[in-house]
Image (cartoon, rainbow, N blue to C red; front, side, top):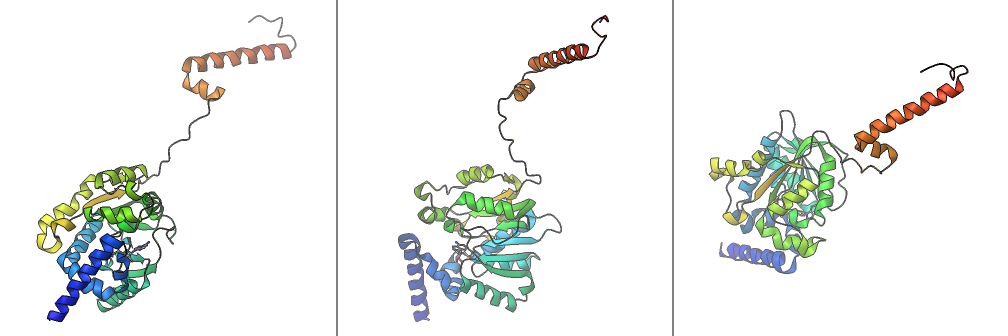
Length: 292
Ligand SMILES: C[S@@+](CC[C@H](N)C(=O)[O-])C[C@H]1O[C@@H](n2cnc3c(N)ncnc32)[C@H](O)[C@@H]1O
């Protein structure tokens, strides 16, 4: 018992050291048992967190919509909660070992028909066609995003029109995200700044759904609450149903000037009519004598 506790404590210290000092926290994900059953997961009540985010995702979807991408899925705490809620999850992670553990867990829980594991890097184009997912979510993997605008562009691409991105944002990620991001210290990590970037990328923030996580943990506090330092701000952003890219600026040609200026438009209209009539009169014999 004492040996167990000592080794767990040592594991926690190792994780913290790697996470905040050497930025090499990824080694822990290669040992899925340590990650799943370790003290850190229990202290932070990760299971509750996953339940809350799965709840928000579920309430963001219209009836019949059920296809969800979980980015940085790891050993699948979120994908499994999504599957328990009758959604179909594609669990994407850059490492195979946690994905193997995830699939073993889904087999054990008889949820394997609802979860599919895919090994892929979220910092590269996602290996999916466009417009196929009803929702895209990612739990505690933001800090591995190297270029947030590329990530958003890919998310927008794979979402169906009207689909949602459910993104929990954690204060504790702000240092580690900056360490990995291509923008380094300039990486935005606060929910307010990220909200702006998400809107610029073409999403619409759904304010009601973004408040849903707090409502959920209030209502089902035992089931979904987590320690205060682990409580995320959840942004729910919708891909517009009709994508409307801004019109390219018009070159200032005669035509565009005419359409901007109604007086000039009227003048040029009557001007070209006069010219047309004069040409016509010149061309048709006998018209010169006739009166107007
Ligand atoms: C903190 S864990 C979160 C796992 C799971 N979502 C959870 O909440 O338990 C971060 C996960 O992101 C994965 N990850 C790191 N870099 C990634 C990348 N470039 N593409 C995809 N997944 C990545 C790691 O392998 C790890 O499983």
